[in-house]
Image (cartoon, rainbow, N blue to C red; front, side, top):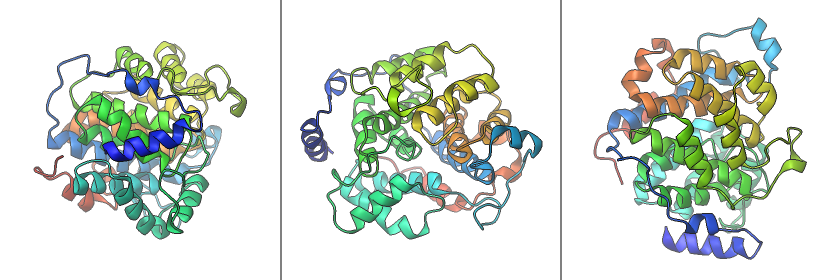
Length: 343
């Protein structure tokens, strides 16, 4: 990863990206535990279950979902109940690449993403445009779309699972992000997701300290996007993490305050609020996320990944309906979660 990191950093610094945040050493502020297979399986199943649960509601306004509440997996996008979307498909492709290469190898990741492109379900325009450029031979460090969408963040969980140190997680999360989303906010959100997963699977509690630590890890990296959002109270991922930590309203107020769209400054903090409020109530958390309105599959997928990272597969399974686990990628997750498949 070192060579890829230096190549990408050099190219991006020429465009004005500031990597001083990545030069500040980052350590776990607690004694980390080893990541067991239950945490790996729980995280991946959480991503898939949330994705499949939220997908039928994607794009619907919250008020309409109050009237048409779904509490079981349902068909979507012409696919049967339990089918996942690109949130899970790309997450598992990243997991496969990390396991196969032993590190974040952008060229291997790109090959997997391009091969997967024709079968992606409900992929966003930024991802599709970037994959088209990559398929035509564009360099991986140049092909990403200038988009602050959530497509890079939603798939970053395997980085937190498999890479041990938070410094390595920051670099790998950014590298996997820029192959499709060449945007500082999108990359910062991917880093935030990886760090939160890394924190939770190693025994850290869901807490204000977790959010503040992740925000500190990003300070100075981003450029304000206030002009690109109708919600201008916080215009960087770091600022949004701190807003989540301080937010005192209910979930309805949170969804109105942060937003629930595919813009990552909306979906990421809204997902975090749901998780932080209901970390030990996985069924309630996933239902709240799946009915948030807007980009429900990604919001629920993020929430599910963090629930699985915190509770492990047993805790997540015991706190959710058994039929939610009938996801289309169950066998693939079991294979990727086998003991011994570790970096």
